[in-house]
Length: 295
Image 1 (cartoon, rainbow, N blue to C red):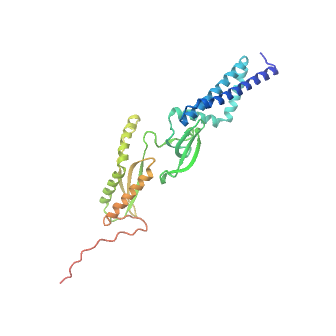
Image 2 (tube, one colour):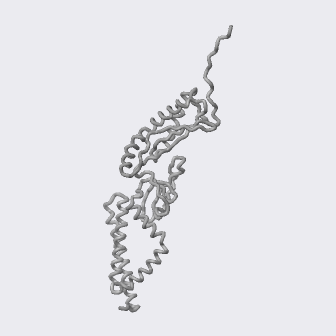
Image 3 (cartoon, rainbow, N blue to C red):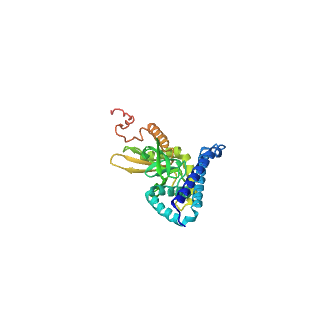
């Protein structure tokens, strides 16, 4: 059945009227739906759900109004949909990324992630984009910069997603201590091991339990969780490297405690260990025993 121009215009007018009516009802009832909900996130999801119900009702109304011409309408919608999908492919990819994030459990609100070249803590996961509180230079401890960054969800298809806090919220960190040649290297190794065990002991115990759970869940090999100390000789100094686990949010504070305790131990043993730091003179030699004059 072919429509006349007047019939088409009349049906479009009816569809416009029904659309405005449904949108008006949704907007009018939204405050009543969210009135008894105290949690902000739940109230926000309720409003979004009401909008989706309204859009679905509009779709049903359109199908009902044009039911006798669904074949022509389907072809027209297919052609229009293909053109829209091509023009808005980034938008479509972001919506698809939202589904992947939600059902693939890539990350959740509160996780620290690396996404689209940005590292930060996830504040909100929207249909089109993920909002991050940016973290600064990793070498300086990864503290927040204060910048809010919105990354399109399509980024999950373009590059690896790093999650620093999912199943194992600890990172292996290292500090290097340069020591002058002539120091008691055996004493230095023992001292650094004791300091690392003292400072990182609590994190080590927690990391052990979480690592066992993750190893049972995934096919990964066992890993050394306890602090370790290794030595490398260079032209300028003996370089001791202390490796330990640290909470991903407390990495800089952990380093501060370690360096403070190491400096305290070095100050207590000036004759046995000297730091090889430019501008810091070597410790003066200890007092020597005077021999009585001959004869």
